[in-house]
Image (tube, rainbow, N blue to C red; front, top):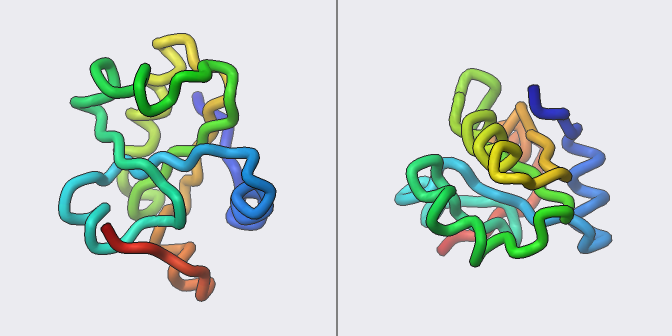
Length: 108
C-alpha cells in the first residue's frame, strides 16, 4: 500500500519545491482544475509517459485524484511503484479537500 501524505505536508513540500505532484484524473478534470504545478498522468499512460514526465525514480512524487472514494491516485501510485519509483505517496483526500481548504489551483 502506498504511503499517505497530509494536505499540510503536501503544501509544505510544494512550497519547498521538493515534490512532483501527479494529477491522476487527467483530461477535462485536469484542464478545469488541478493543484499548482501538477502534471497529468492517468493509469493508461503511466508506462509510456512516466519515464519522460518523471525521470528521477528516487524523487518525491505525490499522486492525487478527486477524493478518498476515487481509486485513480492509488492505481497510478501502485503502477509507479511497480516501475521502480521509490518516493511515491498518495494524497488520499484529493483536490476536493484542497479546494475546501481554500488553497490555490490552476487551469490548463
